[in-house]
Image (cartoon, rainbow, N blue to C red; front, side):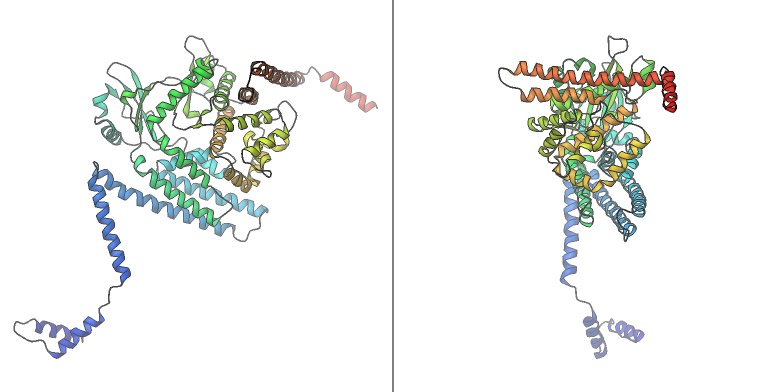
Length: 575
């Protein structure tokens, strides 16, 4: 049949020959059998064509068409990765935990294993997509006890120390886009290999033509262009996750990133934050200002994506070996760091909210032999605390330090924790179980590195995960960053061996702040002096008790009470 139709068709192509009736009937059959195009397919084709024309116009209208063309590839690829990873994670949770009863050992083991697998998936996604995804991973890695510890440990071990490095060609492109010149045209020397790399930028050493050594912070390419799309994509995935698992609500994390990221991506704002930090210490904390140093910003070579700063030499704030080589006592360093951030939080109300170890350095204070000077770096993430919030937060910490249960509850409620979760809020702030928060001992808030104490805290957090999620949803977002700040500082203090009781410093700073904020009128100076005497007396009693307890322990270790102890045992046996 097909061969006959082919022959008839060929014959009909001959010039001057009329089509036969058979060919006409076959032609009509062919026309009738041709599928008609539906409205749906027409709309799809129109949308595809319109999108292609729109994309072409968008690419052609910019001053960097190649860069824009690359974004058309990068953004859909990242979205596809997100969807695939999110689907794998959700499916793994649903399949693994299906049919297992809550509160059982089987559920605990299954949840641990699925958390580990999904933390690994999320880590791989962060590194493949780069940029703000690594920033998200770093943020998760600093949220001790606020998200499952499997995610915290995985992200902390990877994203904090293994950020990707962009090529020197990409660095040159950023210079050309921002300043219209290459690094070699601006600096006498410029190192092609970065000194350090973070989630949003990397730092290169350079030397100006007048001989100054500087550090140049260069933002990773495409971050500004893709940040909005990335945030919306992550937001969509988190909302889908919340829809599938209503109890696990991490929308607050995306909301915080949406608010903070534009500021972190603008290096001009970062430079202004740095200058504001210096001014605050000079005006409001002059007693500690000489021990704080912030590198100078050279504005003439700085833009929103490039920042040129004074080059700093120093040691890491957790490098105890280097401190001892320079005669610096780690206890002095721990005290200085705690006091610095207590001043920021309770007195300045303008807080550096990313104080992990890589964002701080240490050097011997110029003009001294071994006095430490703290160098603060990376001023992109700051938060301002309003007077009411600062007052409530200071009152809460004062109550926590002095174990005032009624005040702990009252000020936790003012900050939104609720009647049912204020004890959990207090435990998260102090990283101590509630029974120790309200204990009257001098060291009730002192962190213990003993394995049983650490296990108790981790188990408490694991069993309270759903409550923690609900608490984070209720609290003001600025408090979430203060929690992160506390965790960063606690990690640094522990790395130094926790040589000082930082809660004594917090108690003094919060109490002084409460007095400053609440004592007004003609009698204010006298009342403030009374407040100060009261607080210092309490702290002196605490420290005296702590010193006496420590001395007793040391005496026992030296065997001073060995004979009385043996005699006492002998007398008891005689009775």
